[in-house]
Image (cartoon, rainbow, N blue to C red; front, side):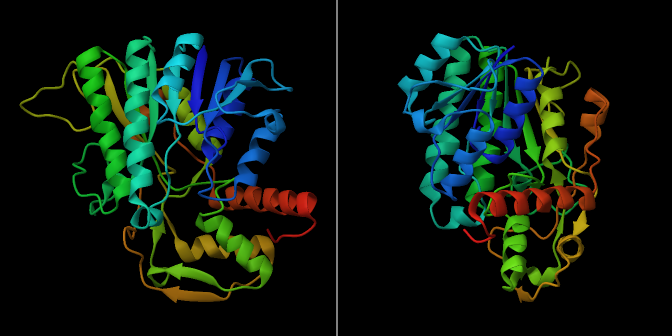
Length: 357
């Protein structure tokens, strides 16, 4: 297939582009490469995929020098004309929209970034998919949409109308916007609620990266909610496997759906929402212990109150993923953390001679 993946200088997008390229799809990666976190990590991800970052210029595709079936283009999702030109030229079979302004806490500081990227940018993606007859749009939603929900495990069958951050609200909005396009224009769309993704090439603003960095520097780590957090940490390869299976199985519409009893995660339209999570919640202090064991370092912990916008617990119900695709994420925390730490030590030691950056 010809597939567009937005956000390929990002964490999940980088891994997904590699996977689809390796299986033989024609992949176009897109990213604006903003400075929300260290852009060097983003450029190095692209270099790892064979992109000569010295030749990147806005709006100009760059071919990978290691994969004949991969190209990258620097483009902003808010650039409607640029996106339309790309869609017209490439005629994509499928689109995976992973580009977004990420982060719960940052949405309290810079809400406009979330409107620009996650609302306006996503509208432009929907419009391009509609007008250029894309066969399937899969897009990143988030476990954050569950907001104040407390019934565990968190299920796509439950109402999610109480988000507690603008980031979460923007992701819930994406699901609603996608439904209208599925209903009005017959565009198959699938929303993917990711649960705390971690692994090699991970985001520097996320807990695993921050904890590892601080421990190696001998600095204290910030432990929010006094350690009473529970997260369904999901290894990036498991996320990618789920996304690939979903791409290959666009929704057809649920013939049993009825407006008299409207299920929140499907529709008569070709629209569906899935959780992709490990289905195995882990206490934050156990997560930290696994990092300590791998590094051979005991962390100094600053116990802090829960941050505004954070939820105390996540736990994914993935029964739909099992039923429809025969798939369930299974990488253990120990395996995943070991792989991340090995990558981290290699990346910073080899590239910069030390673990500071």
